[in-house]
Image (cartoon, rainbow, N blue to C red; front, side, top):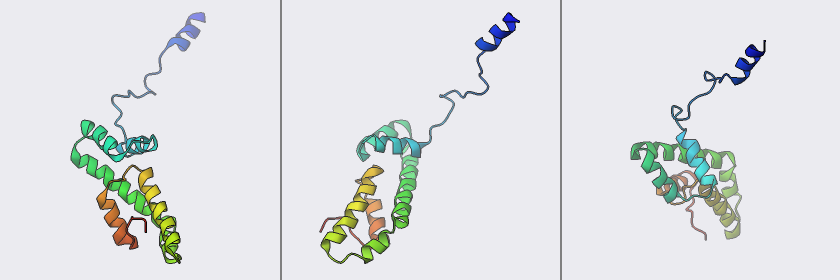
Length: 127
C-alpha cells in the first residue's frame, strides 16, 4: 500500500500539461501585454520583427486597428463628437481617442489615424 501511495504522489502528470515550446503564442495577446507594460510602438515592432515576418506583423496590427475602431464606436464617440459645442469639448474627445491609441501601442500608426479620420471625421490634433 505504501508503494502505491508513493507511486501516486511522485508520478508526473505529463498528459495534462503542454510543453511551452510546442504551444504557439497568441501574437495579439503578446502585443497587448507589451503595450500594457508601457512599451511604445517601435519597441513592440522590433520585438516582433525578431520573431515573426512583416506580413504577420501587419496582420496583428490590422487586428488591433479593428479593435480600436470597435472600442471607439461602442464608447459612443460619434455622439460625443456631435455633442461637442466648443473646442474644449472637442479636445476632450480627441484626448479620449489618443488615450485609446496609446493604450494599445499604436501611437505612430498613420493607417489607424487615417481610418479614424475617415470613420469619425476628426483629425487627431489638439485644437
